[in-house]
Amino acid sequence: MEIKQASKFPRAKSGVPGFDELVDGGFHKGTVNTITGSSGTGKTVFASQFIHFGCETGEKGMIITPSESAEYLKREMMSSFGWDYSGLEKKGMLSIVDVTDPVLRLQKSIDVDPVDFLINFRKMVERKLEEVRPTRLFIDDLTAFFMAVEAPFKIRSLTDDLFGTLRNSGVTTVVTIGTAFGTNQFLEYGADSATMLTRERIGNTLIRSIYVMKMRGSKIANSIRVLDISDDGMAVSSLSPYP
Ligand SMILES: Nc1ncnc2c1ncn2[C@@H]1O[C@H](COP(=O)(O)OP(=O)(O)OP(=O)(O)O)[C@@H](O)[C@H]1O
Ligand SMILES: [Mg+2]
Image 1 (cartoon, rainbow, N blue to C red):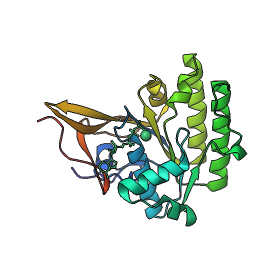
Image 2: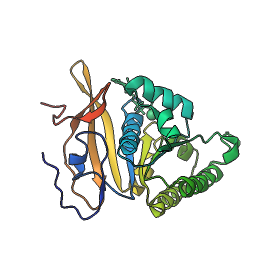
Image 3: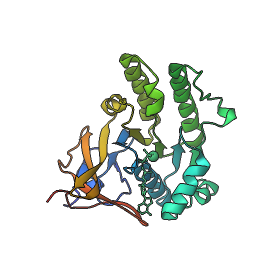
């Protein structure tokens, strides 16, 4: 399938070969895009590749990992694909925000009210975006924090606040979302595009796959595709997992 060029909004290439043709050319610039999937489906790899591709093509990237340390992510990406995040940081192309940094005063403990945490998180993101001015942003799995918020309308309005801040800054964002806690739908509703990563069981074999659930203001391919991860990173195949 060819990528159609005549789209109204400028597009940001995902950097994942084969993905952009599912969404008519890439993410809309300045939008919030979710990648949902259960554990191990490739969410972090997708978003890390989006950032890495940006850095390689001259776009400054920022990564916020609320659940794992910056050091761990750097080691993981070096060991999986040989991507040198430390080198990109040194060159000033990449900024990895460690939310556990005491300077950010973002308390992450069970004693902190989750609504306060998410409000402070949004403010911290706003500050960092102003300071660093990245073109691409990756926020890794926030669902555990949203899960702790009980009232659905609060989850919805906290999501809208955070996503509104991201859109206002003009950055193109990929947010990964786990499915374990059931809050993924709130985040998907609030996003401009939503993509699902799954595993299909065909006989005795598990096949990684991907489909796009929505993209506001764009056509999408209504098909499930095989997703490959190798030493070269992630790629969307033109094949479907089903015969
Ligand atoms: N070089 C590689 N070749 C093939 N597969 C790889 C390679 N490097 C990593 N993987 C696979 O990629 C998967 C990692 O996916 P990823 O960490 O993105 O999942 P995730 O959806 O973020 O999971 P979680 O919810 O646990 O954070 C692992 O299953 C791992 O085996
Ligand atoms: Mg992950």
